[in-house]
Image (tube, rainbow, N blue to C red; front, side, top):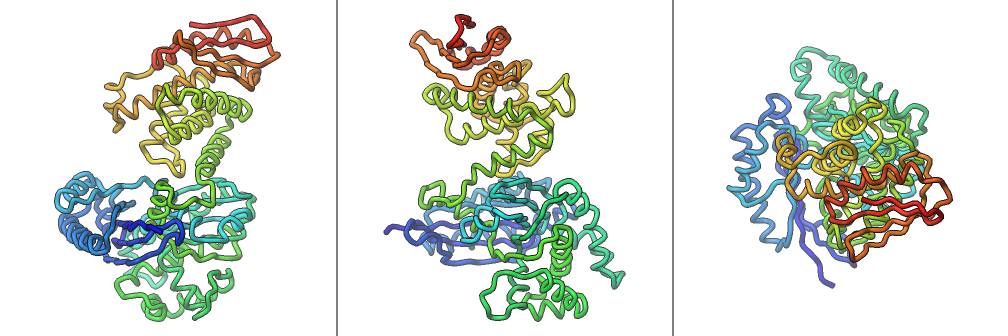
Length: 519
């Protein structure tokens, strides 16, 4: 059976990692080689906001070495991604250009939601217990150098995911001076963490019963091996961790790093990591930590295998993106019955128009998310709901969506009412290209049309039939016994954008009445 050689390059806050994989439908995903290079890019970013020239040159040299290794192993395709250290640097555009010109490698900067979603994918693919565990109260916690990501699952649904910008390297850099002046370093770290953790508990944990923490991080594997020695146990109880933590504080960071088998250069991040783990256990109330030795490289490999149809996922990741959007909508108290009906109607029209709009599965998902969030702005301001919805979406992380996709959704919702900005005006304050702009107005036109069909918010229309005629009309037949006077009256105004975008005149008809409306 044929296999594909794939490489993943992960440029993190304190190391650069190359993993080479063999992918096949029969054997799955197998790691062939792995190389790590210690490099604290985050130290520059978190302290000065820029990555220095020497580090950029060093990164280019590392990439050239990686390139030679990929050639030796016959790598057919690769993906190189950077996370918060590059994402938050003020000079990352210059950095990306220099890397490409010197090495030929295109480094992609992931948004936080993309990064965490890829990590989450690697967990789902690798852990056979994943589906079983997330059906109970579970928190997936990814502790990185720049931040902590907490994702809550309950009954197989993603309840919420939040990013706290206090990672191990960021903590160390912020408290570098304090570490040299006090013997209470661990207590000071706790104080800095406490406000963020308590706020998270207040808004998101409340009465949730968290039984498991699925922990993703570089040091938890060392701790598990130290506690359980040579056994294959991949779970630590709360009591076991607290006993280890007390021993760690008593013996000190350097001594425990040696016992754990961690190099001296990596040991400075150990104490901040221990304190973060401890506070997470205390705030969530979880009794068990499940150990998952996954990383971004694994997520990149699984995502590639899924997109190339080498492997089929056992978990519905698209549903998790939708659940995340639904929970945002719930937070802003949108009308659930209204959005459910509009979602169905919008998807019926989208699917019927495949040959007209030329959009794909991903754009269909963006339409669904837009429908779910289109009314969230009413929570802030009843007189400018679309603009407020735009602001909320742009300020809110939707796991699995890139920043570009989130901006597309925000603008679809923004143009649900009022004037649609011309591309030239929108592009002044955005990175959107013409292709993305066309996606926005095509989907906004569908959203406007379907929203008009439930103008009363009474869900009078639950099912429709759509027929595209040769005379450039699109007939929408609503099967309903309700009085559609309001919907029929509002329909022409909302249909104007649709006709302009698609050159199709939509006509709404009620099957059980003789009233019609068109433009």
